Length: 82
Image 1 (tube, one colour):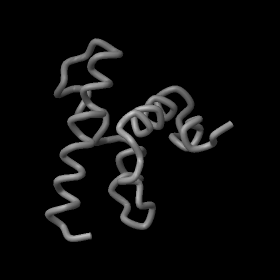
Image 2 (cartoon, one colour):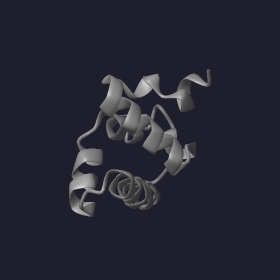
Image 3 (cartoon, helix red, strand yellow):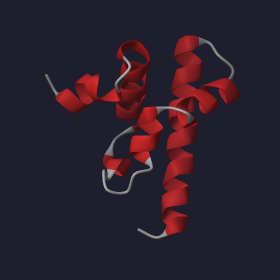
């Protein structure tokens, strides 16, 4: 995947997931964006080996939320599919 496509994908996810965080937790958009960008979930998203660009924004939000609650985004039901 070329870098301009990856940049576009990341901009889309950054906007969508940050908006979900803002709406659910009532925080300002820029704060929610910073929290997402500093998360392990985001580090997983930008890792091209994981190919997470197939995930929905809702799935990434669930991973981020699981990370906030449990300390590990891999605890997300979206990944575990329990």
